Length: 347
Image (cartoon, rainbow, N blue to C red; front, side, top):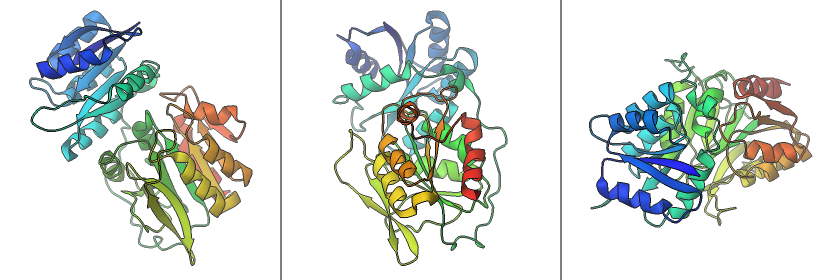
């Protein structure tokens, strides 16, 4: 039985969230909390298996409470976020502080999460299986304050490319990888992170502020360049095409694949078709199997394939699926992924 603590300043939301778990044989709501301070106290006393945490609350907001909880009594936390720019920025920060995942609520006269019970239950079931040891690890201390100038190489044609796919636990994993890569990396990078619209832009902006690479949310017809990281926007699949001597991004809203848009598979398949043996595919933490077909295509063309080791993956779903297919060349812990990428690009 998964014992849940619900944290929200709204009595209505506490009731609505509680109702999502009613009738589920594997969940029980053990208590609720009205603010961050109340949440910290109840996590210590009740030791829940899972916490749902609102971002904006009086006395102590969700970010402060999350940081304290992850320091003292780490437990899987799923954030409840609003679909606003400020809400997206706070959610990305929460994911980097150790939250496993997030669920969005509508914004109106009364905020609600009605109609997304299935998504919420799936994410909560995945969250309780998260690697709490990895969740407790702090943000990288050596955050770079200045960015490397890219003017001398932004027009370079990419001979190689790095394609990264990730889901649950991905924002923190991406930060770990991208901040360890040099600004002089002689390759472009394309990323699919499972995330809804609005949140991918906030994620890109956050990573851009921390990395020596240039990171942005991809737009249609963006040109792939050395030192540039392009993240697929929420609700759009991203593929690559060649135009003359350039590789450009193409976005589409073809049907979701396995319920996902963006999905990793079509991005990696297009990378495999264009770059053949010069492609580097990377699968990081995430639930499900997305990316296993795409990285298989990269392997088929003798590209280099990398997967995150189980010891560091917050959720060992996507990497496991790829490893079990026998298409991964290097299985390495998260902190070694960047070094393996550099070696693969310069090989």
